[in-house]
Length: 299
Image 1 (cartoon, rainbow, N blue to C red):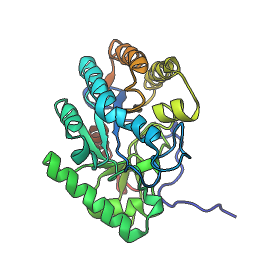
Image 2: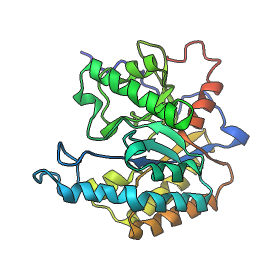
Image 3: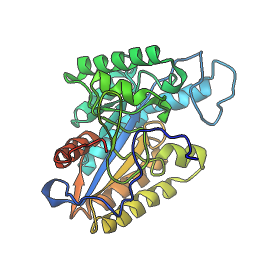
Image 4: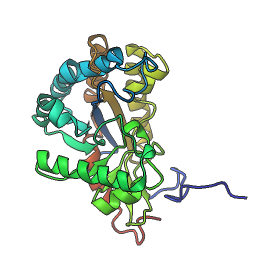
């Protein structure tokens, strides 16, 4: 008896895929996602952390995240500017009102903005379909208003999409999602509104699970980035792949971690032959182009 399935895509071994290249003949695409998040004070939970079960107001945990909006995010922006890497910015739209200077700092770097819900305190899997649709529509319109163009991509708050998130995304007009950490290449998902692209997003090379869940060190995260880059660059001799790196302003933005993040970026940019440093949105756009000849892109 077959196990219950999501019904979004079929299994596909990476060793049995059509060949393609990234722009300029590159074989490895690298992007850095920066999460800019905001939580309400004195209600709900500010998410997993060092003190998640304290009574409200949980000032200690809220303040830990607020450091990223006041300090850490700007330090990450400076670091990426020095490296020459254009960021992919995952934005809770509440940030536009709460910390507009932070968004401005990344806008100056021509950041590719990805919708990350309104606040990480509200996750799609906790909402009914009508409420989730309303949230997605409001987020889409907010980013279009502030950035002058609608967002192409979506990442669910808490990486916690519902059973219908992908369907709602295509209805609203999104082109890709970062919610499925399933592959080193983009994957087409089936939805009731047509195909939606899944762009690789990391569960492993992601500072939140490394630092918060697994209690890893800054050196550990640096080594993870460097080793993943070196290994995937070697793998890319066989086929084009993606390396996604995810950081949060309140985590990697801490001073003692920035030094190691900077070292990892310098390693990658110093070994850039055959590498395309890009954004999640540009990866989606290019993959859509190279796969356009397929008779059924959702298969």
